[in-house]
Amino acid sequence: MAKILDGKEVAAALKDELVAEVDRLRKQGITPGLCLVMAGSRPDSQSYINSAVKRCSSIGIDCRVKKLPEDVTQGDFLKIIDDLNTDPKINGIMVMRPLPQYISENTIKYKISPEKDVDCLNPINVSKVISGDDDGFAPCTPAAVIEILDYYGIKVEGKRTVVIGRSMVVGRPLAMMLLARNATVTICHTRTRNLAEETKKGEILIAAAGKAKMVTKDMVSNGAVVIDVGINFDESGKMCGDVDFDSVCPIASSITPVPGGVGAVTSTVLAKHVIEALKLQKGIY
Image (cartoon, rainbow, N blue to C red; front, side, top):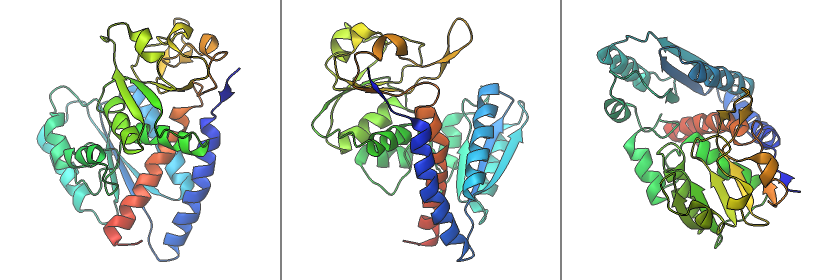
């Protein structure tokens, strides 16, 4: 039976470090600030915002939420981003996606300041992830995967690592982050031929395709480390991941659950990025 990689435990340990760091900054008269921007009323986005505000506030970060109507104009949206870019009390900006159809994400991503772009929307930060430049900010979810691997001492160097998913939010940046650690990375997706043959080659298998329980036991090698990034709901309305946990758990060496795995760490990573952004902006080392 696989060892459970408990995201809540990882988040708690990381939170302790961040609380101490924020206390140190507050003694210098500095308080990190975050603003989350959401257009419309998507329940999933609102749920993430609630979780992020709760977590960041508990660490000592000042949180602000800009909730905009569904029909906000692109001009007004851009004006808000401009204001946040120049607001000295805001060190991190996170724009909730997806945006309403008539607002161009391609325009917004160039507008947000890369120094405050704590979830890797601006192409400058994307390029830094690709080039292995640590001065940028990776997307919070791939960074949460790395936090879990580090916490449990799972080394990736030289290991055959398979990532299912090629999105710019998780799959591609995570593959680059693993390559930077000298993993041997294969990126698969829903159109990969003979998908199970490819995934079974992985000593580490990371599922980030966004399809409920798509990874079954016939796709996993004995003793593999399985990281499930997916957040889905099954036919009974129960939250589940991209991995069929019950069938895979007996053959994996370790596995993240859903809920309580990668998702549990993501908002704490966001807080970490806000603190790092403040330090970069203030020249604090």
